[in-house]
Length: 387
Ligand code: HSE
Image 1 (cartoon, rainbow, N blue to C red):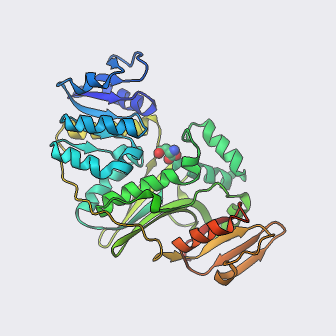
Image 2: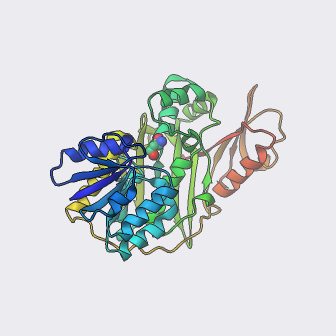
Image 3: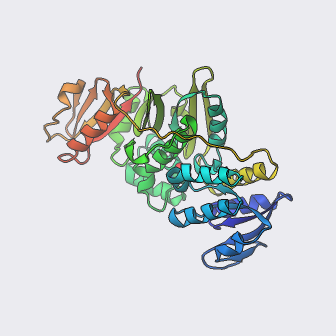
């Protein structure tokens, strides 16, 4: 099969090198902004060269960004070319539109690399969802923040040093906020929930808290309770809505999540009959993600996936029906209104007040933290796994 790559960054090169080993795939053309040699393939800065080439049967979007990528991908689908995409922003925002366009044009749209990189999570999640099996999903969906929390736990370093270390290893997104404020994990969680529950969640409705305010004392507290601090994403069916959120959480030291080191990811689905099924691996990187793109291309080329109709019923996010205890660390000067009545334990140190709450809904806790932060911007909170 002759294909084209849109983009030749890290993931594009990882996919390209992998495809060079597969005689059944020829990368006929690569789209780049500034024309430069890309292996032995033709290069162009003009997308219409690819669109109008009848020999190119599949287009792989490895370029990132939203508007222009959406334009190219829709045009390719309407020109009856299969599409493989690694672009999670695109798939998350336009899932319904793109899956409809693919089906209407009788072509495949594959996107395994969008969440989990080298971990074949979305592919297997979609398979499990066919049996209507999935009730909940979640886990560690961002490698950068897992690397940072793990480094803080192992070496006692602070947030800034952990972030610098992750940046020096090339893990962090160009805009670090996407990682440290939890948006990257939220996007992967929304996309996973869409596949699992045949829906289209509005990512903006999710409660999302990252790790920006974590301090070594929080990690120490976790250790004192035989827990480990992780950034956890979770989505759960809740009658006619979906609970979906991202937040730091103290997980039990014996849990699978607690064992996830460095920049690894752990994705888990839970089914009534299937029980827990987890996928562990590298969530990002040139080769893990590039290989996932190449695998999707092979699946299409070998006919092992077919064009499919994706039935989508949009659902709202409602985090009022999921509740658990929280750890909340505040400064010493503030009145902590709203916290006292929720607390079942309070610890006072020279620098902070720590409250352990009774079970509180995710929605209520995230809203309360926003209110309290007007006076106490460094307030940190984390969910607590029940003992
Ligand atoms: N920055 C992301 C991560 C890359 O660390 O998981 C993959 O989406």
